[in-house]
Structure formats: C-alpha cells, structure tokens
Image 1: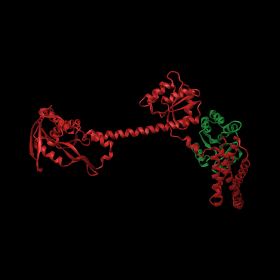
Image 2: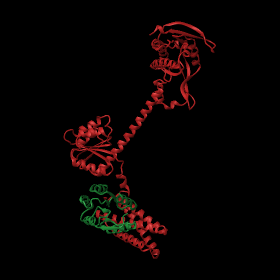
Image 3: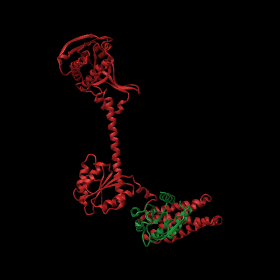
Image 4: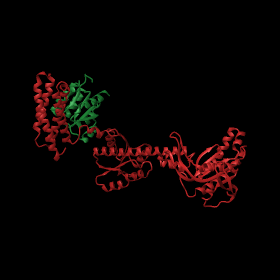
Length: 124
Length: 485
C-alpha cells in the first residue's frame, strides 16, 4: 500500500464510518473520509486518493450519481471506486458497475475480501 | 426487504441471542479491562455502544429506512467484533467464544432481514462467461445490454439487423442470442425461424425481447422455438439470470454434442479397424453389445466355408515374395468382397486359405443357400482374377471350395489379452478334410449342407469320401462353377 496517498471512505452512517476507518487503519492504510457524494467528489479532486470506497445510499448526491460524475471528470476519472451497497440488492450492484464503479462489496462488509479487492485495484 | 410473517419470529430469536451475548461480554470485559490496551478498550466500547443503539431499534416498527439503519448498526457491530476477536481472541478464550456467538447471531440477522445469505452476491454474478449475441436495431439498447453483460464477464457482440445477426452466428460460436422482436427489415420472428431451421445454429438458445403488451408475440416465439423471453424495459437482474440459464443450456448441449461425436469417432474407428476382418454384422454386434466381447460362446448351427488355391505352396516357392503378395492381395481382396456381400463372416486367412462362416453371429434361414451362392460367385470371379494375373505376368490359379453345415461353438475365444470371434467344433475339422479333397474350380458340399438348401443347384455328382481322421464315410455333392454364373 502506498503510504503517501490515502484512500477515501465515503459513508454517511457515522457508526459504520468510524468502524471502517478503524479497520482500514489497522490494516496500515491512511484513510480520509467524506459523508456524502458531493463531498466525495471534492475530496477526490483535492486529495487524489489511490482508491475510493463509496457507499451508494448517500445524502446530497447519491453514490451512483457521484460515480457517474467522477467518470466524466478528467481529473479523477482514473481513480478506482469500490461501491459499498447496504442491501443485498443485485440491482444496486449492477447499477453501481453501470455507473462506473470498478468493483463492489456488500454490507456487512467481508473485510478480508474487501482488502483483497482494494489491493487488486491499487496495484494494477 | 418486505415484511414477512417469519421475519419477526426470526428477529426475536437472533435479537435475543445478541442481547444475551452483549450482557455476557459486558461482564467479561469489565473483568479484564485493566489489562487491555487502549485500542481494544476503544473497540469494545464502540461495540457496546452499537449494541445499545440496536436495542433502541428493536421492537420499534420497521419501515425501510429503519431497516437500513439497523443493517448499518449490525455491520458496525460485526466490524468491531471481528477486530476484537483478532486482538483478544488468542488470549481470552471466554471472550473469543462470546464474540463468535455474537458474529453468528449477526449473520443470522443479516440473512433473515435481507433473505440473502452473505456471499450470495458473489455466486449470482460470477457466472460462467459466455459469448452473447445481442440483436437490436437501436444503438442505445445494444450498448446498454453490452455494458451490462460485459461487466459480468460475458463477451458481447451486437448486430443491428437480422442479416448481420445470421452472419455473426456463422462466424462465431455464439452461446446465447438476445433477440429484439421489433426491427425494420427482417424482424425478430424471421431471424428466430431461420436460427431454428438451421442445422448448426438451432441448438443456440434464443431469448426474445419484446414490449410488455406483446404477450401474443412472445407466445408465438416460444412456440417457434425461442428458449426464453424478457419484456422491455428489462430488469438487469432478470437479464443476468436468463443469460446464465441460456449459457448453461448451451453448455449442456455442447457437452452432449461432444460426447456424441466422440462415440461416433469411436464407432468409425472400430468399423474401420475391424471391418477389414469382420462382416458388418459382427462389428454392429460388438458396438451394440460390448458385453458380447466377453470370452465365451454359444453352440449354434452354421455353414462353414473353406477354400484354398490349388498348389499355391509350390507356386509361391517359384515366385518372388512381392509377386506372391500381389497375387494374394488381389485374390483375397476379391474373395473378401464377395463373402461380405453374401453376409458371410470371415474367420481367418491362413496364407491363401480362407475360412468363412454363414450363420454367426447372426442366424438367417438361408445361411446354406447364401454359402452356395457365395461359392459360385467366388469361382466365377476367378476368371477376372486370372486375367489380371496373366496381364501382370503371374500364373493363373484355381481354387477349391468346401461347404459343410453343423453345430459349432461360436464366440470370443482366446485369452483376455488376445481373443477373436471364432468357431470351434468337429464340423470345422470335417470341412477342412473335405476341402483337402476338392479340386481346382470345384465346390464340394457335405450332405448336411445339401439338405439345408431350399434352392436346387445343378449337382454334377455325389460321392462318398473316406475322410482322414473320421471313421464313417462322408457324402459330398459336387457343384461345378461353370454351371452357374
């Protein structure tokens, strides 16, 4: 993992956000956070994270729309995004991929599985 | 997920487990708190905090937002519990046990609340990738389908009209065709008809796509051989599921086809290899009843034919080996054709001698008659053989043929390593003795064969022969080749 560049966690639920920050930090990652889709796009542009973990059910601008916008923005279109979908709804996940996410993980997150996905996307 | 009658029952169960474990964990935690590091204390407090929130949610009537929040709380609890298990588990067995029970209850909660087992998503998406042909006249529809399906690993090609679709089918091994029914020019029905009429494409599953109002059109297509259907605008999940089912169907078909071709190749090989020595009947018999290849046989009445070129041994001593082989191949080749044409079974060639049998493995009423006709045809063919021999500077030859009917053991005789379909019994020896006595151009029939004939053949003479190794005299009838064409 690249220590200089953080990964961005976008999650509106405080409880989950805190928990994931803790877990990702324990795994040796530097984590920055955003609580909605708009903030996520701003942070992506400012901080150029190596990867984004994004909840899809977000206030202000939802995850799918944020992904679509990110994919159109030259400055951040290259940053890999993993969608976090709260419900085990297949349509949500297909829509996430459709919106331009590179991979997805369903909540509750299988953490070892998520680490593998992160590693795969940050190495390529 | 919607409310189901079992849901609250289930909720009561998992929530009770969680409550009990949390109480237990609180106790265990306060016992060892002084010995824990700051991070572990922090994680444990987060876990208990989340449990508190969960407690507030339970019992409150759930709308979908509340359910969403509860999933988040459970997810957080799971995360902290897993971290604590990693950190404290090895040193504190009671805490590890409690945490494992908590995690298992959270998993139950998740399964019951969503109806989907954790990890199920991996299975539904990760399907066997296939080669999909999407046919639609509208570009945006083609692109949408291509994006959906290539995301889940399928290889997608598109066609904008019927002609293009059919030519793509000809060029590549398509697993599933997604076919829009309404297209200008050649419409979906016509494309479907052509696919289902084509000998090679017909096995390719076709999923037809149509407007919701066009139920009649769908029914018509299913009757015309469509494998499945989707209404527009289609649900992506349903699309994936149908594609998956279509690919599986195609794979089954492909495997079946492969198996069939393998069988056909094996059969061809057996026919080509053994057909040189065995009549079609024996080959078919072996192919149809492989168990018949077991050693053993049965007693049956057959008409035995033995033939020999007169003076061949002496002749072969005068000729160069290559000449002998040329002559033998010519002679045996012609004779083989004639015998097989008369449904005889060639048992073996010994040098120039031929041993053939009529009536095994398959018995027919006219076995003796066919044997006689066959012998006549063989003698008649000698003229042509000799003409060719003379043209090659080889001597003309004459063959003697003996026929005898009797009961022999027919079957696979030998050892496990080497066996052949063959015949054993006294009538075999008798035939051989009669054959020894036949002159060139002669056909000698034993009386037992003669009595089996339903046709009359001109018999030149009948004599009684003393046969070597046999006490009684054997009655034989002579038929001359020249008397019949």
